[in-house]
Image (cartoon, rainbow, N blue to C red; front, side):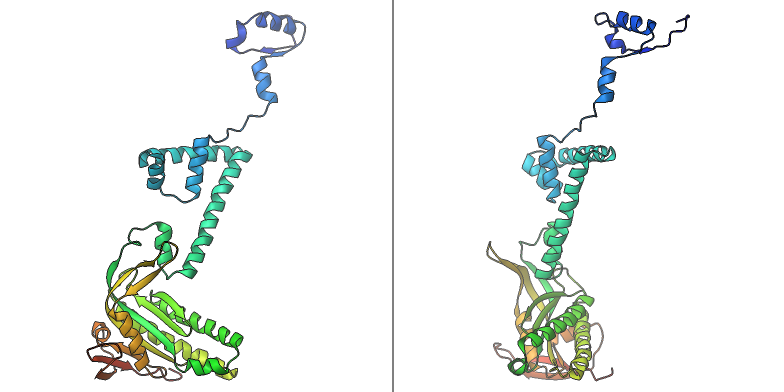
Length: 338
């Protein structure tokens, strides 16, 4: 070295005592060469292998991607939620380490998780269009109670187009379908604007409930505001339709307040969120009392309002399908320009 050797050697101490590695390194360096430990050379010339997920980790990733909660995964694996939570944390750390290093395996697994989230969101959006508002959210979140029957005090709204059969008889079906779509849009906006639940559309009829699936203390007030908003929005829609030479929709709306049973009812193959109770039947009968543009409230709905309302008292009158006469209150139709 004092004579100025130009080479150098880098040996791992664990290998110095193996064979004649040290002696060979000295001879090589003394002749001007350089030496690196074989393990170092191997590490430099061979890319670091990606650590793939184990079969157990792959299974766990699949269950996480499906959206299964920790408790459900723990039940499947017959272990504790705490153990699963720790395993998921380790799995995510491993994926993050892979992805940070730009490794394809880690990026692929992260894309798998992302796609699963996108797919669930799309499924949720489809559920929201097919199920009443709030029910899809409950199903996605796995909330308890969907398989149980709930007893709730609610206000039911049923709207119907007066003279729809005559309109359908003389209208082009495609054009009428477009009008129904617009009508249902303003109906949904009015109901959802008061945080009501759109239960179903049947032809020209719309059914909604306030106070289910989530209870609302002011369900009667919300139902009345939704009815008035719907009447007003339809009035504006009628102006546009009339200018275009289209038939107009004049609505009769019934509101009824009372105790109902709410649940997913049906078979294993198909079920729907339904309300069972006299309040539903009465709302249907009361909307028949409503003339064009009017809203008729049951006595219970009128009593549940938080403020007084100018209304015409109806009855007691006999209603089809009921033994006892019914008292109701008629709210006048909205006036053009108001």
